[in-house]
Image 1 (cartoon, rainbow, N blue to C red):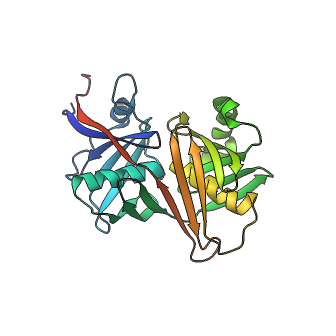
Image 2 (cartoon, rainbow, N blue to C red):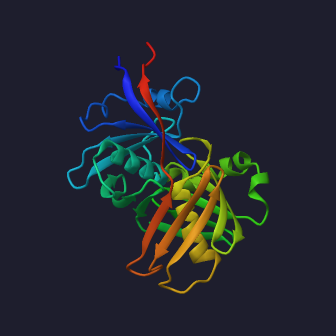
Length: 272
């Protein structure tokens, strides 16, 4: 039986996570899918969109291991990355700048009380499916649909579920689905249905990154090499994505936003 577990809770624009210090490597082989699902359960556990372990790294300041709320190991989580940087700062492991290792490789990050900024890897895939529909791999796979209608009035689950489970995306475990609405130049509203959570989250870091990449490349015509920052309003708060040297060999993508400590505690696992 698992021993009582010390944890912290963080949120980034409403995207919330259970965060655990695993520098002693005591948990990776003990936390099975059922235990992770329990910790993330909003009625019987702590409640979160995902679980993050902070583990040691041979090449960076630390390694981030991320699990979806259903207990499955996930692809990159952008907001989770920003929260684990804030947690590492709280532990005294880093100062205001660091590198960390995630499932898609190393990342640079910058911490301040106001926001945490991480450097994303360049998009691994980009397809224009229709005039207003795109697919982008921004560290996690994302379907992006730009809509003229008010996205707050759309039944996201009904629209997203057939896309999330579409046959074309099954080889990669399905796709996340984003609805985007342009509210002003370089300003978007976004809602995201996340696989692994199997529902809408209040924000998604890789989702807004995919929307920014799509907006700058496929929706508006901007010059090659321009430096652009796209501002996002999500149900959980504001985020921004800045792309420097866009569409060049030196392209750099930065995800910026708040990463906030919520509470900490100790939780017992239920008896078998």
